[in-house]
Image (cartoon, rainbow, N blue to C red; front, side, top):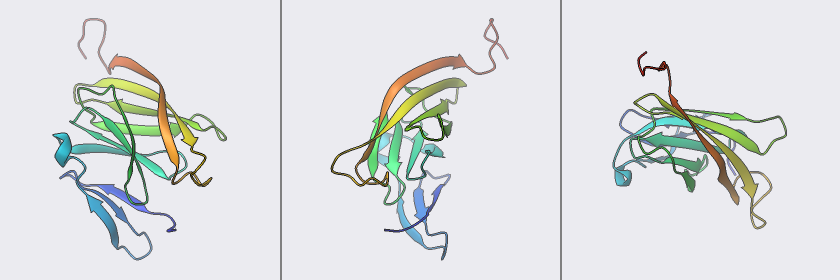
Amino acid sequence: GRGDALLALSSDGMLSEWDPVDGRCLISTNPSAPLGGDATALAVLPGRRHAAYGGRFGLVHIVEVTGLTLVTSLTGAADGCLALCARSLGAHSMDATLASVSAGGRLRVWTICRQSSSSGSSSGGEGTTWRAVELRDLGVVGADSEGTR
């Protein structure tokens, strides 16, 4: 298999995988077209074998970095996703947090768990799925008790 890859999400919603050694585009897709809105946010998940992307289509999708194959979709972002951030819950943890902010400033945090299927490889690539364990809606960022900034 290939080694590291560079992922890019362009302003027109194209998600691309690039070879960082020779600069070739390995695969490019517009995941937004059938979803009804442009992809606007991208975050690489812990382990660097999966990435999450979101947009105005109300879901956050997790794909394998190599090949951009859809692994799962997270619900709970009905008003879209403007930005994403991912981090591991610990050095040896299979769990991670994935935070999204909507265009309206609503902050949501998923706790997600990486699970390897018995038929998949142990490398964290093929055969790996992500499952949402918890979704916390933390409200609008920067709003005080009266709903103003």
